[in-house]
Every structure is written in structure tokens, then in C-alpha cells.
Length: 412
Image (cartoon, rainbow, N blue to C red):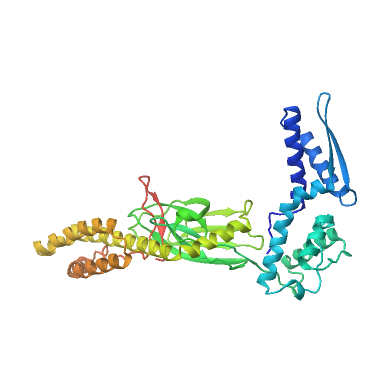
């Protein structure tokens, strides 16, 4: 339950921010010189160390011609500055105990690791929370180094009697037609992991596919976080729904996400690598999870409506093609009724907000066009023309723009 973006360097940065602000106010000077920045970092770390066994420490640094910044930092002032950071660590401890269904009384020993556990304020807060004095006999820096060695041994396959498991905090997926989130890797999946799914195109002759990689628990793209966008080019022009595009998500032991897309017939491939350099904080993850739970019903309805609308549009588009080519085989009233229903269904789809009602209309339309489909298949077979009867995609991507590059959607 640790906060992976919180560490001892944050104590140093808190002091640096204080000194930088006071230098700006005292000398009307913004520190931009790399030399002075490095001096501030070094001095801040030294002050943190000295305040572990002293009540005060002094800083003195030249910031310009005949200008010297001097400051006395007391331990009490330092503790006030770092208190919010220590509280974040304590919150992580509380979450860990809650997850393990433990109370402080049920814990045998509290071992301090990491250099910043030498800070007296940290030790006092740990003692208050766990209601006991922490164990401090181990060298806290050496413990971290040994732990890194164990992890390296596991990753190299040398040591196999220990298993450390990471999980994905939020679901990962791609954008599909209409702004829906198509999830490939659910939240809390163990890392490393791999997931693949086959998608298809939505527009006839579409040669490029834009892939938007998303993270989040909501069902719509607008409520999720985009991690990266890349484009699969060179897809052979084919009728919509025919290309088979395999999308693969792979997360390795280091949490690096690799996403690739391959069109089966042409073997055209594109990929992107996403390195977790700006991760979410624990609070942001919890907020996103809570919002997903709060809006679950409306999100699922919205996603279902998008799926039905896109499938309906695909059916209507194919029906228009068949009517144009084989409509003369029907009686004029039947042909006219299908054309009128296509127009009416498009207007109805824009206004309808109930996916079940819309899907019922779609199924009724498909039943209505069965006689035309049968005539078209018979005519196609007699002329050895196999251009009719392509299977539509279940969940398709967004329409392609004019440059013939578009999205794609779900299981083919």
C-alpha cells in the first residue's frame, strides 16, 4: 500500500522550496543557475541529516555578487514542514493494516527501512501509530540495498523461492467507435501480464487505424486517461468488418506497457511503448475507482447505447449497399419500405436513449430485410459474386476522417 512517488527526496525538496521562496522574496531573485540549484540540493540534504541529532542547523549560500543567503533551521520548523509528507506515509500504513485486517496490537514488530527513518519525527509518529517503539537496530540504507538485490535476483531467475507480485491499479484498454472504452486488462491484474483481442474496421476501404490507449474504470473515453496514441497504417482496403486487427497489451516486470496492433492479412504492424514516468497518486486511483462505482449503471447504459448505435449504423450501411445492387429484385413497395425504414431508423437512433428499445428496432429491421438478403445471396451465388453477406463487427470503432484513417472496434 505504499505511495510510489513519495520518498526521502521529498523532505529535501520541501526545504529547497522554502529556501528558494525566501531568496526570491529577500533578493528579488529567481534561482536559475544550475550551480546554485545543486548547492541548494546538497545543503538541504545535509540539513536534514544534521537535524536528526541536533536541534538546529545553519545554511549559508552565495546567490550573487556580494549577496549571501543565511538561514537557521530548527528541528521544530523542519518537522512542521515535513509533517504532511509523514502523514502520507502513515496513511499508507493504515491502509496496509486495513487490507490485512490487522490492528496495531496484532503486529509483532515494526522495522524501519530507508534513510529518512533516521529522522526523529518519523520515529515518533511511527511509535504513536503502532503503539510501540520501532525496531531500529538494522542499517536502514543497507536494508533497501539488500531488498533491491533480492528483486534483481528474482527478475534474473536466480532466486525462485520468493514471489513478489505487482498488480495494475486501473483497467487498460483502447478507444472504440462513439467514444467507448474497450477494456483489455482489468484492474488488479497481476504483473507481468498479456492480453489480446481482435478488432475490425468500420469504414469501407479504411487503410489507417488510429489507436488511443486508455487507463481508467469508467466506460466512456471522456472519463478515462489517455496514455498514448499511435496509428496502424497500410491496412489493405477492404469492406468494413473484413480486416482482422489483433491488438496486444503486454506489461512487463517493470510496469512498462507495450501495445501493438497487427493486421492479419498484410502483417502490417504498429506499436507504442508507455513508460510509467508520471503515475497516478493513491488518492487519484481511489477517486477514479469511487467514481466508477458511483456511475456504474449510467456508464454501462451509455456504453451499451454506443454499441447498439454503431452496430445499427453498420447494418444500415450494408443494407443500403444491398438495396443499391439487388433492390430491383424486390417489389417496388417492399424496396421503398426498406429505404424509408433506413432513414427513419437513423433519425430514431439519434434521439433514442434506451439501448434495449433501439436494439429491438434494429432486430426488427434485420427481420424486415431477410427477403432481400435471400434474393441477394441467390443472385450472388448464381453469378459467382461473393461480395455480399459480410459479417458486421459486434463493436466497431469511430468513423474514419477524410484522410481514410479511422478507428476500429470490438471483437470481430
